[in-house]
Image (cartoon, rainbow, N blue to C red; front, side, top):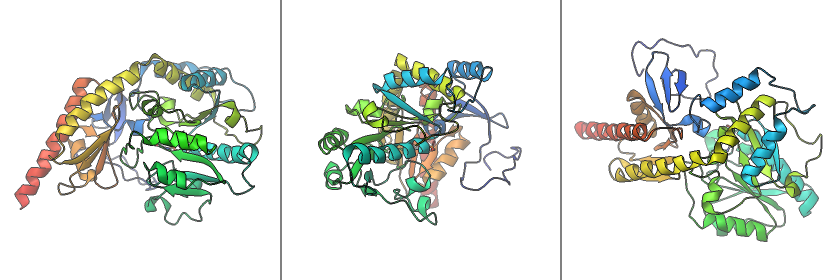
Length: 408
Ligand SMILES: *Cc1c(COP(=O)(O)O)cnc(C)c1O
């Protein structure tokens, strides 16, 4: 219990596939959320970057409300007046020809796998049934049975087999290993430009350009999973922009729905996405009018460029402060834009413990892989609130260091 007296909201009927912190959120605005007791917390997770533009962003809420009163779902059996404009705006934002709309991130990944395989057989001429996709160790691309088939996370895989074949995993950040894994059956390389769930793992600067060069030379698709790294988080529209590369397919999700509804997409050129023919792939909710209205509003927000600039400037501020803490309770810090992975000194406690103590001080963050915590506040956060959040982390580290010394 973080705060005695918090009214119990029963979760008895809920499947236990998550182990959340003991905070029950009731409302939110901008970078702040309020729990059922009225206590406020600075949201430094932003729903894993799905809330990049803050809770209740006025333009996004207005777009949702306007569309709610018109129509929300038509299915793709008919056209709707929002999907075409959304697809055009998103394609233009990405500098590509076409958009395949889906709902969740995992569906975008699954869709790209299907597109890459079909492209491999129909365009590249890979022998039937042999297509392979090269992925990276430490990846996180979602939770479906096919996607966990190429995960290295045993927790994500145990007892969920048998797995889908056709994937080869190589060390992340190692372009030579990636090239060595490519053969005549390879249709695509699927990578996160920065590995988010792995702990905001940023590859060497030369890695993504090398991947682009290698995939082009071998006539293999480069699929960038920008579901967490894209749409402003890293101080650019796509993390691939920061790396100076253009992938063949962008996978987008999370922030694409403005934190209001799930919206995901595969974005690419006609020579690749054009392989899909009517009836081969689909989704009841994909491209629905409500999702499209929100996706369009998100793209309009990003087209201004202000969010990207803000993430870059605030990120510099955040990382400058975090770097000072290295050696003082923090072992290492990585980041890009307003996105930081912080390795806590394991001697002080687990990432989970740090997140619990942060919550007691009014900051919400989430641990990953034992001793790493991630900070990804909404980009609309004020510089003062960001500083305050880091102050709380400093205080928690000090508290843990004092406790540790005291016990000796
Ligand atoms: C979250 C995430 C996904 C999966 O998205 P869901 O909407 O949870 O299915 C895929 N790839 C990356 C990089 C992600 O961060």
